Image (cartoon, rainbow, N blue to C red; front, side):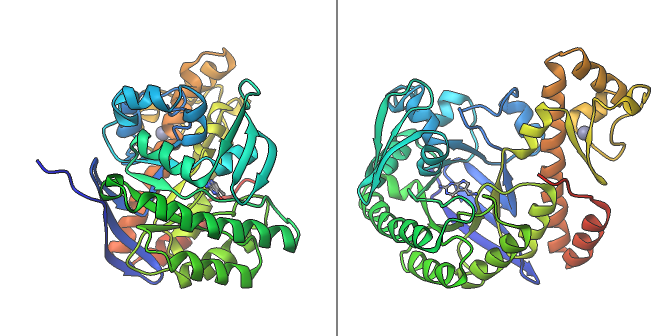
Length: 377
Ligand code: PRF
Ligand code: ZN
């Protein structure tokens, strides 16, 4: 069997919503897709069989964390990230810039790269676009990301401009580092659009990043403190400027309502820790919104939390039992809550793909959003 190269096929549209398929050396995945997050080479608390059974086709991991621990050489020597963590399907790694900014103690940043202190042991490290690409090549993910600089929430105009210009320079360096190597035939490289919430900057960034022939394009710098309206406005604007024959990835977005709105605007790929993070605190998704399983009202509910859910937890356990697990501090509680929330968002993606294929996406969106009460974060 010869390994497939990366490709994206757009197979249908319904309004701006798109149906497609991503092919990688580790298999295919249907889009729109939600990618569960395996930050440290694990979706917290779950085996990859459980992740796959919940409907996941691709997972995301973080080069920042893996570089610091267990280290690039360890993963390369283990035969790459797929073999090391025991997941045979497609993997996407984030480049590390975003995490170094948000988690590491920033020491210095210039056009060359960023010097930061590890959040684990305080040791000092330099990330440059060349290093970020090299690390991701050695991890062996199917899709790797450019090294970028994200400005968190309402930075002032000159900060947003500086970070965007740097992101553009780094995009070129990332492309030039990856393209001539043998890795580029096997690993797709995605560019990242930045520009904060400033429309002219977003247009400029979209134009510049798409002038480089990346395998796909990501929208970065959103879901970092701006309003939902701003997020939608910028997502719509950027999507309109992206080529239709390449996948579009909205980074770090993943509440149920944001997934539905993102698909409506033409996004193909999403990742987010939200479903699994809130699950560990007992917050579970239902068709009418998020509930907390520790609530007294579930104490005597000897029926599944969600009768319409086909996840392992709802098929085997009652709401009262799940509440008991959380109240008793049993680790099966956070595990089953994670299975349920992952299944909820992955099923939502399946439902959206079916609706797009059937030409009834708007109807589906309106029905879902009409019933689902978002939680303010
Ligand atoms: N850049 C990168 N990773 C990211 C983001 C970004 O802007 C975001 C923003 N929501 C999440 N993850 N490289
Ligand atoms: Zn369930």
